[in-house]
Length: 132
Image: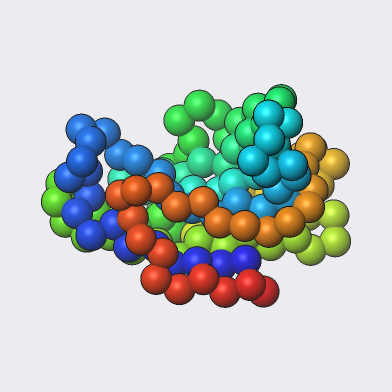
């Protein structure tokens, strides 16, 4: 699954960066026992990979990681665009941002499986979503 997100005015609503991205492997969505895995980018050059549900987990730490592939906004109020993709190939789950794999995990390290879906925060809009 792949989507392109545009944050038209970086940090115009909050005084801190806010992530946007896609999620896969959703189970029991809309219930108290829902679970899913997502990869999201920030307009400051960082990204996060996390899972949520009854047993929440962070794959790359609380604040995520910086990566040169993640676009940075020129400044507060400036636009920034990210293409975010998640793929499952064999035993690997990968997150790619702007065409570069920024994280790769063995499926056995992840606890969710199931439907594909999308997560969009209120500061960004998804302009193109494709399912691989």
